[in-house]
Image (cartoon, rainbow, N blue to C red; front, side, top):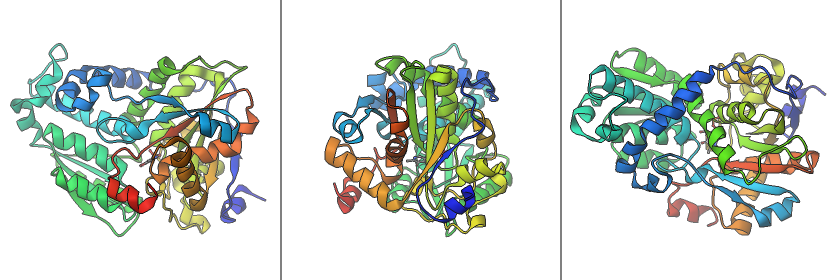
Length: 400
Ligand SMILES: Cc1ncc(COP(=O)(O)O)c(C=O)c1O
């Protein structure tokens, strides 16, 4: 049976990437962009301490803890750590890495161009009026299924930008409400993620004061996500080796978030890390693009899938324009998961460890479930990608 026929059966699959290099050598993204992202996030640390007090504990760095899951590890018979991007400061999801970074790129460029700050000065200046007034002349536009919109909306509004978020029909009402309460303009679409992105792109193109953050194609988002890996290296209880590798499972939508993190991990740990993405059975856009080699020239609807899933953050039918190509030598495989199993895994995490994540963010456990037995000596990291801002009223409607 071909991989397309398997996907059409709507049953969970494990796709092993035939192009992966066991000893990766092809790193096709400009590494200097990742170094610059790291340095930029450091420059803004004093601003974050001032403007987002929740970052004081991490010295103004937007970073999340790495937690051992003893009970779930026992259930899955594996040594399991959870990367808590669900509690990342500012916007409570993995999107706080790339999304915030790209807003900072724009803010820094505008403020420097206007002569309002230099890299030698304290970036606390971004919380003061000359810069806020300057940034208010500019509009940031983005298309999103929800969490990227939250990251970019919250960050941009705080810096003073006008910000417009185009939301796909999957986006949860509370995410739109939260953004509006922070002064963000939210445009709701009946169409899916690609429609929201396209409309935002056209709107921004028509206005020279608008900057479009292009989730399908952004190098600066990718660079922001990739910084996670070097920070993770400092958190690990032990560095991975060929004998005791690290195996990482990350939910995938358009691919930028997991792709950036995986790129960084492979650059950091080489052959000692194995990386798997996880997608919903109705939205396996990265798997389809990579397995066919067509990347963004094919979408899940082309093979009769619906792109309908409860995992709102992963409801993407067409993959990024560039991430799949970068992943060809680096990604070990992709796993798919049904909505039903996703909900069970989300509940299991709550029941066993008392950790709530949103449904999209539980997808990594489906990777652990299908892949862990292939690596019996490994340490496994499930990347929890969102849930920190979910209001209690929403959680109560689920199971918490
Ligand atoms: C909770 C969550 N996990 C994972 C992802 C996937 O990120 P990407 O779309 O960059 O692949 C998203 C995207 O919005 C998300 O919201």
